[in-house]
Image 1 (cartoon, rainbow, N blue to C red):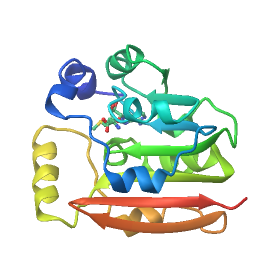
Image 2: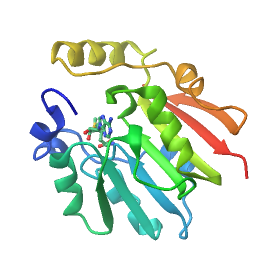
Image 3: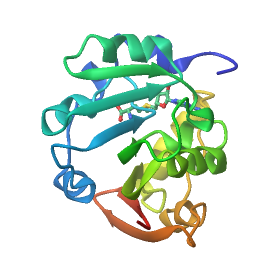
Image 4: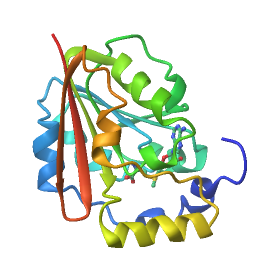
Length: 189
Ligand SMILES: C[S@@+](CC[C@H](N)C(=O)[O-])C[C@H]1O[C@@H](n2cnc3c(N)ncnc32)[C@H](O)[C@@H]1O
């Protein structure tokens, strides 16, 4: 990533500030089964992946920040991969589940990011994107704070995220609650 690596700087303290917590909604939307191959895209320190890895065989954490990935690499059961999500080093149709939590507003190119996550998703697989819901006033304040910290943040509404997905290739669903939006894509089998 060009410019200051905010996440590399924050990596050693990240989970002391932002606690690992998996919402029931995310768990339900992911519907992971033991044989699933799962990719946590923009998975950072593995904050979320570490809470899911016992439920599945393969849990890959891909992230552009090597500092964040170093933390993920110290956690049991996670396979860290250094990559920008806009250009993932995986073959088409590799993963049963792809998740992205709190990262879409940070990426360099949101359209390319979503297209890549759909490319590496298996037919019959599911992508789940969890984002702070920019329609909530509290999240608008967070967005302002990130702008002031010169972070490359660009928040989209749930429907705008859904509009980045190829609807001829699968079904899109948007769910929201508690300042959070989830956008799901079920790829046709
Ligand atoms: C707010 S953190 C969230 C990390 C993790 N998903 C979580 O919930 O703890 C955002 C992450 O996105 C990563 N990131 C930002 N842009 C990226 C890109 N283009 N490709 C890969 N990772 C990216 C950052 O390095 C950072 O680890």
